[in-house]
Image (cartoon, rainbow, N blue to C red; front, side, top):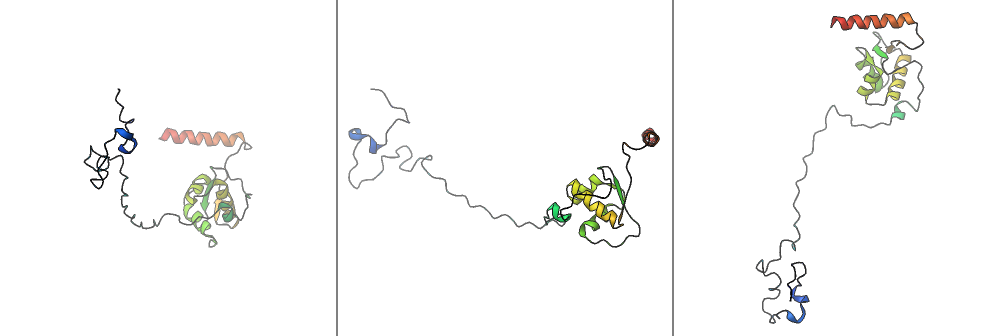
Length: 174
């Protein structure tokens, strides 16, 4: 006769005639968990739920933008701009401008006190670049900001040479 492994051993109810019978009323279930002294084995017990502490309510960050407005709502669905606005195009605030009409124009005016690129403005406003271009174009149409011209491939070779010479001189001074 061979010995069964632990996994193959049968509980007393399933052993058939080989299992010792319990006397009626005497310690019911005592033979089930002999190794642990009548208590269910650890693998047989269900874990009790651990009470979780409620998270502390956090204070809202004053710098966190809590409103979420779809980009197309900011531009009224427009995508066309009236200026050539590249990522590197610089924008500055006009000195004596009319009061801004929208919150976005206020943010653009504050950001453009020193020259900012379109890419920087998009990052500061937390909007896609295309939306930033439309907002800057609207601000320029309202004479709130000045859009500085950037060099393009259509410019004269002298202009490109002049700019490259100035960049080289600036690098040498470093």
